[in-house]
Image (cartoon, rainbow, N blue to C red; front, side, top):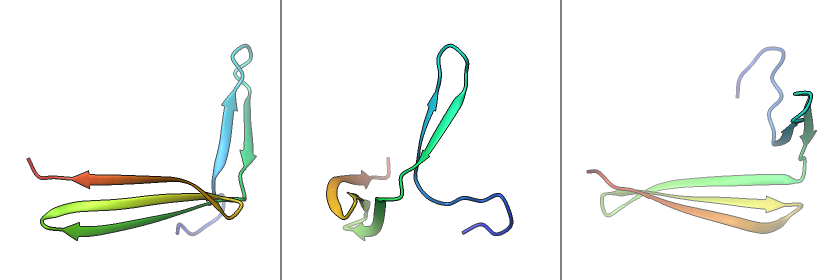
Amino acid sequence: MPTGGGHHPGHYLAHVAAGTGALSVLDVSGLREELQVYLDSGELRADHAFWLFGLPFLTLRYTIRRR
């Protein structure tokens, strides 16, 4: 994690108003994620799971193969 002032780790929703360009930001404190990366038969794989207020709602699975 970065050190020093001005850093605010976490998850945020951001919106830019079409007419004014005003930026609104909301902290999503109930959002958690976990990223597991592993090597499987020469392929790099990852499972990226998300929870909202303790309830699982999305898991993304990636596979990266060498060309």
